Amino acid sequence: MQRIYNRGKFREGDLVVLWEEKRKHLIKLEKDKIFFYNKGSIPHNDIIGKEEGSVIYSSHGGRIIAFRPTFSDYILEMPRGAQIIYPKDIGIILIWADIFPGAKIIEAGIGSGALTIALLQAVGEEGLVVSYEIREDFANRAMKNIHNFLLEPKNHVLKLKNIYEEIEEEDFDRLILDLPEPWRVVPHAVKALRPGGIFLAYTPTIIQAQKTVEALKETKQFVLIDTFETLLRPWQIEDLSVRPFHRMVAHTAFITLARKLHNRIEENKFQRDDLSEEEVENQEHSF
Image (cartoon, rainbow, N blue to C red; front, side):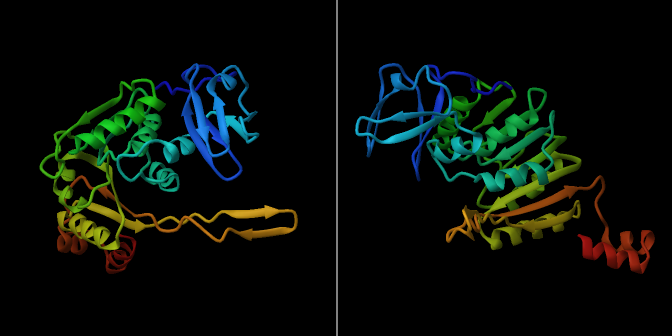
């Protein structure tokens, strides 16, 4: 997996994030092109050949600092065809869904490609990410964003198909859904995931999460079902003044996780034959 990230001096074709005091701009360096903003203009030629972290001055005396973008910079500034999954949630998804090198992942709802990029980097060249998307305009925008950050990843397959109707793959490690109705995919997830595989749904509302959890329980093939959200509160530290910022990135979505069993749970038989009453009570609290 080769990421488009050069070390050393900026060169033509590099992605660059230009930092002002409270704003940033993402550009791709092109010879003889000019970047315009509210404090004047900066020729790309003034950036090409400079070291990363250089201070650049605009035609009106505005000051910016040029860096190569981090992944977080890129996904927050890249063109969007659909709402993105934010960095605070992407990090959680990668860890809680245990996305490992060599993993085989199915995702549905490619959006603008933010999560897809993270998954492709995490699984590496030995892994595979299969993306389902029904809207061709979203898919086209996402693929442009992916290819601007990663050099033509060979571990990615895009399918313009409706995952509500069918999942063609079987025995995959992970299934990650960013869809309005993820509960409709749950019956297909039983076949698509290997035993021990992880199901994850990313939903804006708790009603969506609730319906997804109910669908998972109905299959009797998923356990360790859990739903949570992440909150991010930055702090401002200046001399002796230490306080949280007045604005924070609070709710963005609920994340629902579950693990697939090898066999269905026949609840009464499972409890009566295999567990004591105390063990049954403990299991109910943990699932």
